[in-house]
Length: 153
Image 1 (cartoon, rainbow, N blue to C red):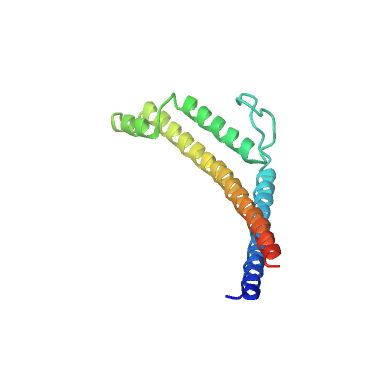
Image 2: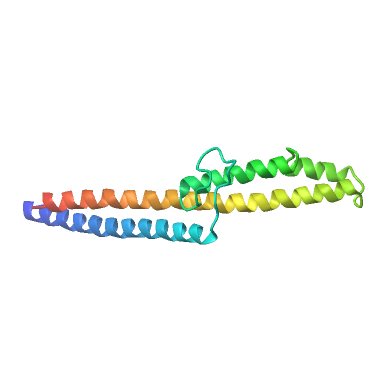
């Protein structure tokens, strides 16, 4: 390769990296904003008994994570510390029409609802992480591409 073709190739690769960087930064920022708006629309506040961020609106990765922890703790307390497996095992050992069976089924439903809520919140936390990764990778591509374009002469 001649020096001018090498410089041209570097400028081309640099341009491609810059374009990819812009796309990734835009997609990452867009995903972050979308998840934030959806969480804000739910109007969830972190309860007062949270280990941190009590009273804050759930609208970011930290508050979503803390809310998921609080939901888990409340569900476990409401089920008397029992898990789904514990409740299923206990249900097999009692009369299906008894008050104890009805209480166990209520606990099972509460645990199921809490698991669904926690899963949704943790999915939001994951979405924030992926969007931050995409934006960070995009920033790297922008920098590397800019450097390559300058190196290409």
